[in-house]
Amino acid sequence: MTAPTLDRRAFLAGSALAGALALTGCPRSGSDKTPAAAPIEPPADLSDWTKVRAQFVLDPKLAHFAAFVLAAHPAPVRAAIARWRDKLDANAATVVREESTHDDDVRAAAARYLGVAADEIALTDSTTMGLGLTYNGLRLRPGDHVLTSTHDFLSTHEALRLAAERTGAEVERVPLYDDPAAASADEIVSRVRAAVRPATRVAALTWVHSSTGVKLPIRKIAESLREVNSGRAPEDRVLLCVDAVHGLGAEGAGPSELGCDAFISGTHKWLFGPRGTGLVWIRRDAWAAFTPIIPTFTGPSAGAWLTGRPAPFVFGLDATPGGYKAFEHRWAVADAFTFHLMIGKDRVAARTRELATRLKDGLVALDHVRLVTPRDPALSAGIVCLEVAGYEPAEVVTALREDHGIVASVTPYREPYVRLGTSIVTTPEQVDAATRALADLR
Image 1 (tube, rainbow, N blue to C red):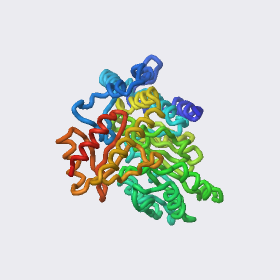
Image 2: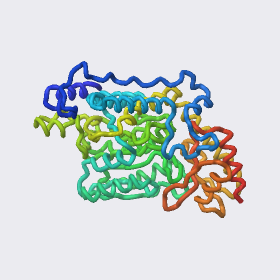
Image 3: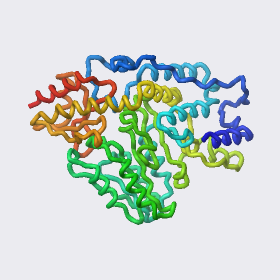
């Protein structure tokens, strides 16, 4: 797995890039290298959810059911950001000379968490950037068919629209369910399968819909598409690309368990990673369908620029956009993954599921509240959407905040709902308080 990265480094070291891409004007030397920053160890005892919540400095007077929108940083992430910031403030030129090493540390941490190879992971600034890079980097042809859903967010729809305008491909949006609360895995899979055409090259779907809270049965969809692809040439197969941002950090499954070809996510939502960070993973045997669209300082674009000798393509390096970044945030992503692994991926997923189920069970007992999200944990994650009779969603969110200290959000779609997210920073008591507060809205 690491051989391509080592080959790339050897290529760089043997060319003028080694100096030019350091961007310092100084020759590289062992004495100047900044040691790779080891992840800061979280507290040894994270077995109690009170101790986990104590790692955050969220306002204790509030119940944070919208913490996932733009995540708060737990103590290990805050400490890592501060440490990298101090290093950069003290001597940015030297620290940046080892940018590729520090990026590799982040890829390695993400790979451990996701159960994939590190060189299959590109680093981005957000889910939106990752979706744009992925869908505009796919080698689509005029007449190719791209399938997505009516439930997806602006970032997917707009990235696909831009890709279609550039390539001549056709984008089709199909509903995967009529009533989200009554959605079923069989219905969703059958609607995806029915929409696939001979010209379909991409199925662009979202793991957990932020519009309704429905969690798609991605593994079953992947198995259905595998049957379609079994009779197709490699260049004609359907690629399953997944916006995973509301699953990463809330669910325990990774790309291998999901069976997808591409996994795109920000790391600053349910993972509670540094703000302004994200990643894209693409399966190795799907690399041939992808072309980078932003130059990278460590890939063929830089090599060809200086030497005319492009290095072998490695997705994780070549799809990572070049340029200066908020490096103190990017390099602290490793600590966010470590923090979640210390808690336990499956334990986090079970906690999120337990609290979401508790909330949904309370809401269905209220005759003036309509639960929008499926009650079945197999079809939902941490997002719980609802309507309150006689109230606009924004009115409900305002009342919860001002009268009860409960922070919720409104889904940013044409059909808005009240949205609450249960996570590692919410408690059973807060869930029950939210149910009582909604009961009072009559």
